Image 1 (tube, rainbow, N blue to C red):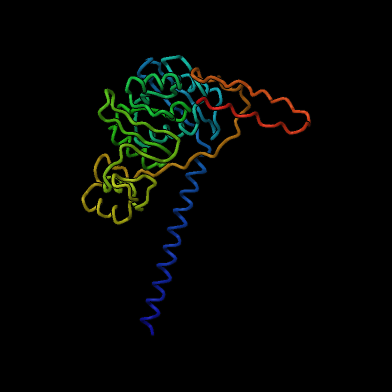
Image 2 (image 1 turned 90 degrees about the horizontal axis):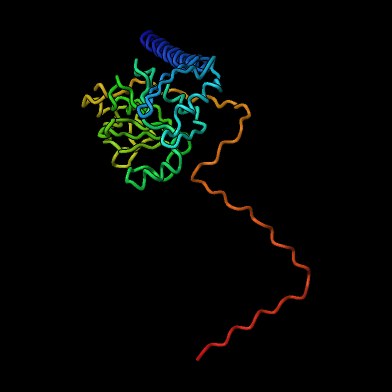
Length: 288
């Protein structure tokens, strides 16, 4: 009976310890989100085409600075046509933590931010491989690279966030990573264990090359093969919670895209007066 009591006490203590650890983890995550909401965020960028630089504090005490966002809208404009549009603040809030988490000390090198529909179509016709309905047109995408961070490391860290689309272009003239705030997807898809190495819980919205969701067993296999210890594997990078949407101040409507032709307003058909039903016109006689 005494032995049983010892085991029972140990079981209770073990359960209590597990609950304390879980509560501590929950508190830590909640505290992190709370502190993130009150953060002041400054971002430095360099446009490789215009060679412009920008350092701007776009968020103060957890709130967007509208004037700073306008500076980012201009900086990330379609430089080919000198056209700008409102960029998605969530996109900026994705770039910033990636830059912070990876410890980059260089400005974010921007390859492409906003791309007008006209520019997008022009590049497509030249075989550039741009998507017809690119997220760049919506101001929700950025092609970028951190000069002091391996491009594959940047790709993997972006995948861990699971915020949206992630494209990997390691063989481009300037290797880069595409990130956007659209639906969660990736290209090109990667081998199952390489993807699983990024997700210790064995769950991801992204699909590997075989098109089947990864499992916890896949992560265990990736760990056994040493894939989780590689310099480009970022399973330890914690995903960042998406910011709460803010009520933006009233702004002037955005300019219509250069390639967009508005349809003429529909003219209402004149009302017909009540009358006897018209007889159908006789069919023309067939020529023999």
